[in-house]
Amino acid sequence: MNPVLAELHEKARAVLDPVHYDFFAGGAGDEIVLARNEAAFRRLALLPRVLRGKGIRAGFPVLISPTAFHKLAHPDGELATARALDGTVLVSSMASTVPIADVVAAASGPVWFQLYLQPDFAVTEALVRRAERAGCAALVVTVDSPVFGRHRRDIEHGFHDLPAGLAAENMRDLAGVNGLRRIEMSAFTWEDVERLRSITSLPVWLKGILHPADAVLAAGHGAAGIFVSNHGGRQLDLVPAAVEALPAVVDAVAGRIPVVLDGGVRSGGDVALAVALGASAAGLGRPVLWGLAADGSHGVRRVLDVLRDEFEHVVAMCGGQLSRDMVVSRC
Ligand SMILES: Cc1cc2nc3c(=O)[nH]c(=O)nc-3n(C[C@H](O)[C@H](O)[C@H](O)COP(=O)(O)O)c2cc1C
Ligand SMILES: CCCCC(=O)C(=O)O
Image 1 (tube, helix red, strand yellow):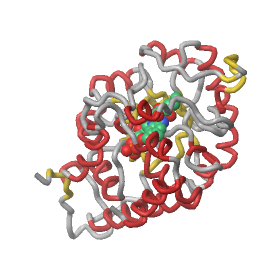
Image 2: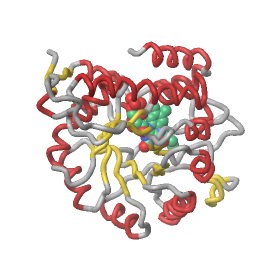
Image 3: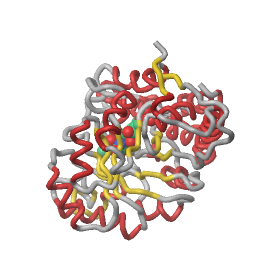
Image 4: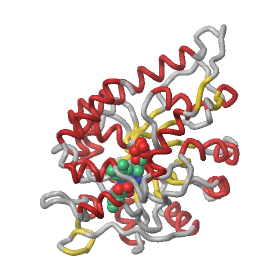
């Protein structure tokens, strides 16, 4: 691993309350998927093309995937993350500890709003209006959580609630206990996605798709794009690594909508592999949390800078080109 990322992770582990560290680091069940997400990248290799000059690939195809409760990592919470963007997209979690309007106001790049559809449609609609008023550029509906994953580390620690003083700020004044409504996980249908689309002009992405048939349905139901994701190994501990599920989804979508990959991306080389396999971009979860915990906004910036630098170097080595035929198995 890049020594800067390793150093940020070690510092995060040292400064965080161990209970909060385990909330960020942990996965569901036996954490098999958590480990596989990273291991699967190690099993892939790239065959560079030669004598192609500098090639034409430009840009940095990385975004920040939504993660909850940044104030558990750093006192400035999502404000610090947002200040680090420098053009990178931040998908801000519905479970942010800073209200979405303040996240967008602090951001140095586009902000998208991630949400879980709520059983009470009026609550979902209120969240959408908050995201729109704040100036978010897209909605990302997470669809892999009909029920919440079972995180053994959290259960062992008895970690169920935020410490006093911290709250899921987007849920304020939505008529719950003390004006704060709990985020609910519930099962929905494609009709619910259509209903959401009907009340907003924002692009609606779906996050947490693994089955190619669902990717086809997503395109058919007007999703602006999808995230191939297993929620960083925090939902069903029986699924493939995210990058293993990517090629079949890319084939099924056949270019109709963009496909983002998240889960286990830890280097610019991992970003390059995901792009070569057909992802439009790779999403980062935990690496951003480690940067944030270790050094606030500066730490997040360092994570993005390291990945950008590594990615550009790998692409240059590959003749400016990344395509599926260049990806082979190491074993
Ligand atoms: C601590 C933590 C909190 C998360 N919170 C959310 C969330 O609020 N909404 C969501 O859609 N995904 C959430 N995720 C999943 C991430 O968006 C992403 O899919 C995953 O972290 C990517 O894997 P990686 O951590 O290996 O990069 C969370 C992940 C972690 C680790
Ligand atoms: C209600 C917070 C949801 C956070 C989440 O999605 C996760 O921890 O994986």
